[in-house]
Image 1: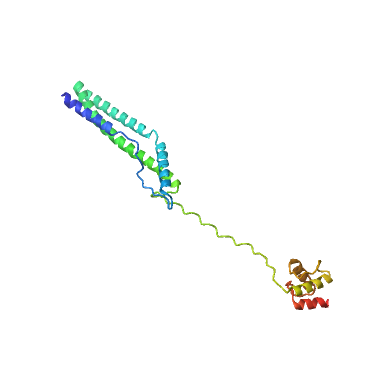
Image 2: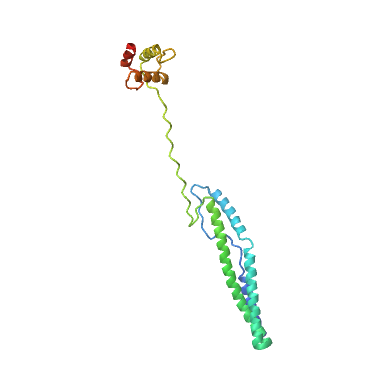
Length: 223
């Protein structure tokens, strides 16, 4: 009688002890290094992310085991109470044994569920950490790098057209003679000379292109 009563209770206790939730030993997701990343760098990031994931589940295992033990003890107590109501002291012993077996099953189920939740939380934290460091995480596609804006065209640089310096100098002398250009004629065509030519062409109702030419010189000489 004694053996038949104790063995089921012992079995329930062993089931309870073997069902305890444990800390995850590592992630269950397979992460690959980012393209071109040295493996040593990847391994260093992985260790850091494992530590980060462990920190995110701190205390979860202890809470899960406390809940499992509480559920098992409650089931055992309920079994003993039900046995006592039915069969007195002998019924209480049998009820306790049955309750212990049931309690072990309750603890096993609770611990299994908690273990899965803890592992999932660990994997999520680990994956987020590795993804943030640019590594390839299943189901988490890396956003494409934004395209570089097209290079802006450089502002055009004004290059003065090349004209016969002797012709330009002769035109400059005529423009200075009629008061449209100040300074000594040097044969260099620039913005000041062009502006003076344009002013003259406008006064003569000529096409105002500012370009020195032989016909322009001859017209100036007639002025």
